[in-house]
Image 1 (spheres, rainbow, N blue to C red):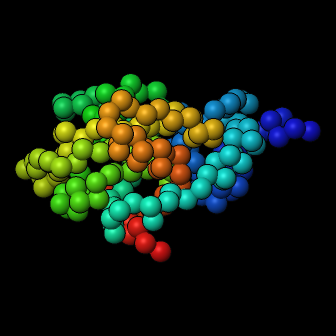
Image 2: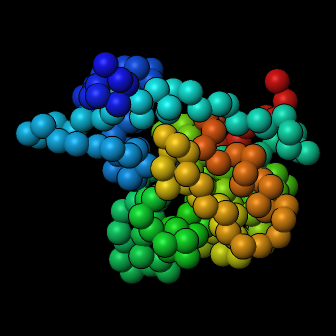
Image 3: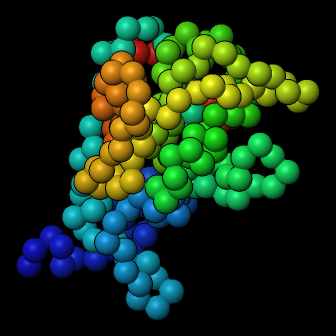
Amino acid sequence: MGGGCVLLTTGQAAEALGCAITTFRRLIRAELVPGLSRRGVRVMIPLESVQALAAREAAPLHRLPVREIAVLRVDAAKAVQGSDRDWIGFSAALPPEDLRKALRGWWRCDPVSVAAGGVLPVTLSGYVVAVLTGLETWEKDDRGRHAFLGARLAGHVTDLAAPTTHLAPGPAADRALAELLLGTRLPSDSGGAIAYRSTTR
């Protein structure tokens, strides 16, 4: 029997990946897992997609020329109103400009540290799904949150299992960072949206 014939429940898929069911379901809501089917109310995932997710390599942070970077941790995209953007969070279905606006702020963070890293990997459930650059300037609102309104979306993922990545036209350095990080695993711990990771082991 080929791997493509075996289907897993979300619980089985989460167990195989060593994560919580809610963590795995974020990937489904963000439309990052291909080949889904339904059996009644159950969402079924091809075993080969789960195996591909498990095989994603760790982000090679040691190749970055800085000691520390910020990491933006997001959920699946949700519509928002009364804001400078229509969405907050990540979805593989969002057009690049909507995605850029959905990811560029507003967060509680140390903007100097974010800018100093030169790149902001965006992770969903521990996988790098987008990469932001152009972090040199920022704005602060009256709640003490910051936004990098001039940030560039260097690239993003539309299929995490393959993975399938899309690089934005722009500086070669941006594209190189996106190619290096997209689709990799980058777990981080933080009480908020922004975490900080050392690039050295």
